[in-house]
Length: 120
Image 1 (tube, rainbow, N blue to C red):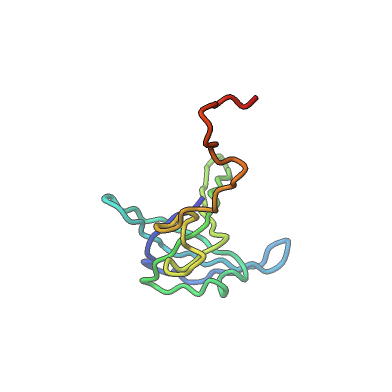
Image 2 (cartoon, rainbow, N blue to C red):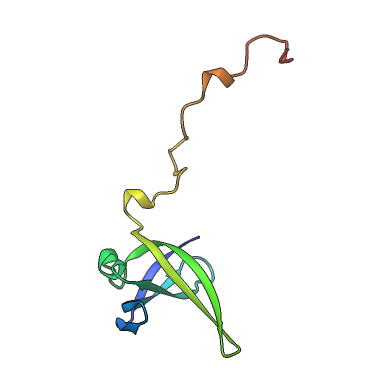
């Protein structure tokens, strides 16, 4: 799932010690575009914190996973980013960007010139 918006705030990094070793987490707030913008708090875990290098005001496309878990009869939902790209980068362009007409047509499937439309 992807979400596009502008980084509004970057929250302080949190770290700790768990049964699998040391962990790091940093959250940032992304404001979506549109008539009714929404703010979404997205978590980044581990080495991806340094890899993404976000700053407030960056326009980004975040690939996210949404996960809920239950603890003491309460539910907690977290939005985790596994990839974040700056909106201006070439990789962030959608597959069929304006001016991109897709792959060239395959001549084997091109319509024939004959009036007979039956395949046999």
